[in-house]
Length: 212
Image (cartoon, rainbow, N blue to C red; front, side, top):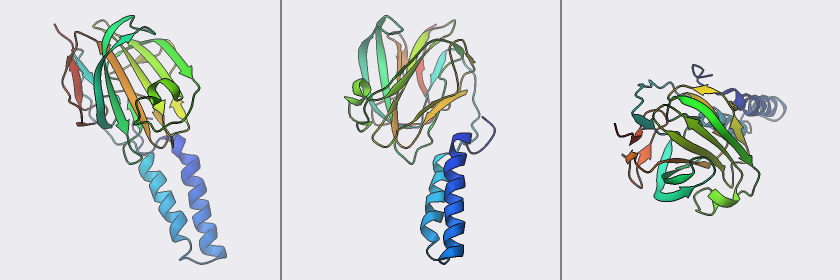
């Protein structure tokens, strides 16, 4: 999965678009086939999985997603952490890489999938009403909660892990299709190294440092 440039969940979309393009060119003409060809190119772009060199450091928390930091707030997290923490919300546009990566190396100790609505992912209410999938990851250094949130276009959250899965730092664990939002809640003592409005990259951008 991590070494292939296209995630397997994109194959059906790309395959159908290729078939439609070919049939349109044969049955109608090549000019009418331009539109489905553009759609096929978009699917190739959207489901891309660029190679990334992850540098392991147990004291650092890496971004779980590509996108733009929409907010950094203090929250009371009771589902997994059971304490006050800092939540960083990252908005992914349809043009961002949509695979999610683990911010730390650790074991999945908590997993929860909630069906919900499909409000725009950039709205604050989406975190409470939209379909979402959360995993709690525990390492010797800390515990964190990462949540994938569906948006108005993102109608499918994909997870490749389950309870007990051992994740490496920066390892792929899922994706959200067609526009979405990813949240990470960290213990309050973690030093936040990103700011609102900043662009981040999954597995590359350091968003927090665990105090020694």
